[in-house]
Image (tube, rainbow over all chains, first blue to last red; front, side, top):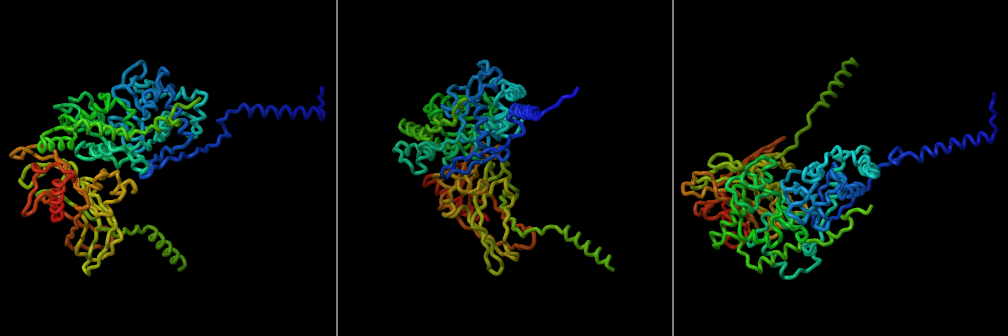
Length: 375
Length: 240
């Protein structure tokens, strides 16, 4: 039996092959061979007189990385019961802090410390209240498996992301990697966090010569940067990105009385490095956006700025690790002026509060680029 | 014969290739605080002028306008600011100084007015004048000398230092110039000059003494503090 194929038959046969190829290619996943890795570098703002942003050579920031990090930051997929995201405790409208003393993790478990605001993090050499992390990606690895935070094993987290409809391609675009790892998740979140830059407070505008603040601002500034208020030893105004001493980084600010270094309720830095000399010490926090970041201190003990100022006004409580300079100044005041604390008047306290609030940046908390992305 | 010449040339080539890189000529200067003949270590027990215990946790000071003078009175200026930091930098290394015999080294203790007006955010992070060094306050500018530690406030003064002190000295008026006559030679490679000074000599002269118990807090903020600051800088100038 012989088949004869005419011209029409050949044309039909070729057509079939053509469509078959077309179908095969159209079914091909986007992530395969045609993918071209071409991340768009992110351009950071450079406010006048600021230090250049310290970039991480191991994690170049791209628009694709930021988009991925932002999605991850707001996505509860990284918690065991799909209820908690990074943004649950770091709310954009609160300058990425929380309004409770300590935040709730999965199953309503309360954390141990107050949620730190996320502002100008690239200029921070140490992260967390107990300075346990040196880099943003290192920091981002910690909350996911933490039982009282997101309580999810990293293996499960990355598996979820790998099986998601969108994440694999987003990781490919950001890092040119098909396999999602916890390190890549951390890098992406770090890239988003790098963009959380605040530089439009009244104080910033005053430094740039854009505004002329009222007298209360200048009275508060004078209290802040003299021994009257004695804020400047820990909060360096010229370190404008953070308003924190770039060298000392952490200290014991005299909030707790203790006769022994192990008496502190929270051992802070000392628990991480094992040094008695660092027990009861915590990171010197930024003073930016205080208008949005109450309650204050590592344990959120102070509900208002007035409470904070009043505590300093009373003078440092003694302990084996209390900040030496605070004690020097308190002793000096006592021996020379008869008062151990600052002895600020009601007006001076109000002026200091006014100045502290001038470091808050409304445009930062309203920035649409920092909000939950629209799906 | 041709083979011998080829071997000779090859050998010469190998030897040339193995030749070590010539070390650049450098002057390595060390500021060496001492205490009663011993070295000073951060946190270690030291003895003050009255033989009472004290300790230093932090000791920093700026050196600027360094100049070396050779035996023919030719001066070479070193355009670098140095931030001495106890326990951090042993030697500060300077290049581009001509080889020869020198008779003195001069420097400024602190920063001259122009340098003191540097914007600390405008320089590289590793620069001694960077805000990252933690020496700059916006109202004072650079702290020329930072001395922090504890002293023994008991009468005997022979127990563990218990009372903290913090002396932060700055403002333009604190700048002092020093010339140390000390012969040294700069030849090929590394050359070393040590500038020892007794730490107690920051606090006394033959006619004047400052004790921690009397003066333990200074932010160069008012006339009294500035007066103490000036006295300490005068002592420091004469300590070398």
